[in-house]
Length: 225
Image (cartoon, rainbow, N blue to C red; front, side, top):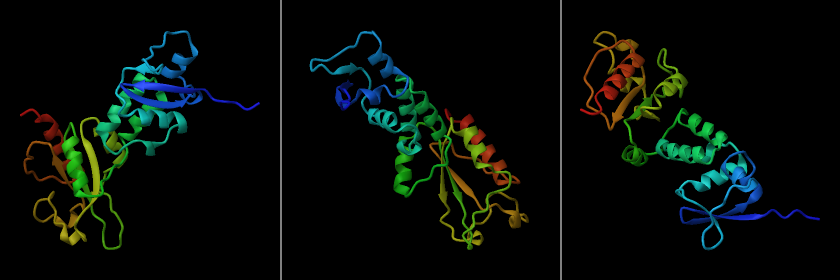
């Protein structure tokens, strides 16, 4: 005898979704408790299970239930990932919560400056774009003491951070903005720019990372001025 999976219709904030009971109960959490215990179920006039939540990211919730943890199901926008995290917390999906938290620490890029404009407009915090320089031999040289993963984990809660290849073609076209006269030969190959942030003061420092950390401290300390 063939197994026929029970179909479930959900009314999520006025939008109807249809899926299977096995999908909804695949992982522990809100739906497994709702469908496998005796707690009362609220239904609408069409006999759909009614849940008073925004439907905007519910397709992401369903895709997670169907396919499990897959970082590709999350958008690039940190704002949208935070919104999905809130929904994952409501539906008690620990795996998706962890996926969202890891996603906010991943290295993110953008394809065009039109995309960047949209990211800046939608951001609820300062945006930091770090421009890395690819030398003539197509090798990326990372500035001294700059560990990308550590840097992202330290600052992702306060800044939206993106990386983009520098428009400069060679290091000779990218003069130092970080060192006083006479130290240009040690100049790092990366630059950066803040958006949605106070105007930065000019200062001489020894390293790319030192100046970047100083400017982050200044930006976060002067947001309300």
